[in-house]
Image (cartoon, rainbow, N blue to C red; front, side, top):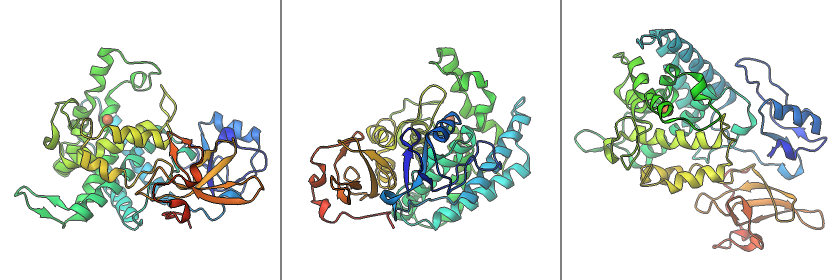
Amino acid sequence: MRLVRVDWVVDDMELARDIPSAALGAAPLLKRGVRLTRGLAARLSGHGVRAVWIEDDMGDGIIPIQPLPDHVRTSTEVAVAACLDAARGVAADLNNLPARTFEQLERAAEGMMRALAECPAATLAFDDLATADSYSYSHSVRVATLGLLLGQRIDRLDGWVDFRGQVRHDRMVERMTQLAMGLLIHDIGKISIPETILNKPAPLTPAEWDLIKTHPGAGVSMISDDRISPLTRCIVRDHHERWDGLGYPTGRLGEEIHPFARIAAVADVYDAITADRPYRAAAPPHVGVRLIREGADSQFDAHVVDHFLRIAMPYPVGYTIPLPDGTPGAVVGVDPEQPEYPVVRYRDPSGQLTEAAMHIVDGVVQTGGAAASPSDAAAGAPRAAAA
Ligand SMILES: [Fe+2]
């Protein structure tokens, strides 16, 4: 299968995956197997769907790795929705959330962690654009997915440092559950900010920015309960701090920021860039990857960015990319060592499907790209995630 933008859909394309509804628990907008038309595609666009997975010969055999199974993603979104509802109930005085809300979230966090632990050392699947779900729920779950993949990778490869300065490799399940909890509710404090400001389709005034900057502190106030781990609270409090000390709310600098909050910062910003927002359309993954890479050592911890660049590919498997002659190509494999040189399947002038590594810069295939890899990847580029 391959992912195409809805404005590239042509009549009779076969839908390869259900398109979920914006409403939690509601029937899908469209079921897999449906034959699409330009008219249907236009209606999907009206529902906020920007891209769809289709089945055709160009995408034959491409099975993008989906780190989080649909049922885990849905149950996690339900838990986050319940948590936000409960938080709205106590927002007036910023009291603690009810115990049952934490228990439901904790179960969701453990479910995510188990699902992602079984995921092979994979590049991030590119399925976000195929959904039209509510931003606050899906943003939390996507940030938690990316943040957990990052956290698991860092803990597995580097371990963690305790208060004695010793590197350790134990307590991974406990630590990752706390990381997942923090990622799922990192923005809980935003319920104290008017929706008109959160969803304002124009630049914020200085006063509105000052209000936005209160959400980490408001969130911490809601989770002061002793049952919430300090690690989880660190993420809520510090996910907008920057490595160079120019973040908010307190301007913590470098290693003063907890490692989990540094992971959350990368995951939060990447998802914010690559998701639709009221004030701008989603950017493609290569833009998100570039901006995170450029933020290393200023906005972000460069060590976390290094790990991120092994997980998030600028041109993920299944991605459809326009070729210089205007015809489509589908990414069938990507080597994390050379992410700018994915293997692309395309139709040659005789109509035969062909595959070659192509050099892509800022979303544009470089002419002569079929042989452009620095290591002659065209001859046998690794196919990290293609079936
Ligand atoms: Fe935030």
